[in-house]
Image (cartoon, rainbow, N blue to C red; front, side):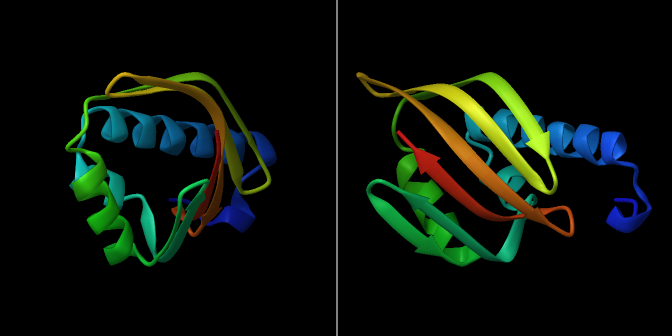
Length: 117
């Protein structure tokens, strides 16, 4: 990744969109190694049912979550100033959810993800 301070805002926005699309792809294919390649060691996940801290805690969460039948469709991806927002539809087994993920990036890695369902 080029140094963030050397990137123009449009370059940073496109870089984060690409990284966010990578995350969506890895999540949909249940590729834990791929997802974790985008995650900072100090990562935090917060959603209505979970507060997970650390990359290893997130790994354990994904290992359990990916036993479900899932489908994650990113309807829109927005990026600005070190953040990504994903407007999504999520299917988990028979449940259909709609929501928004807000991802904060640090040094090219996800440092936090807050999911609103």
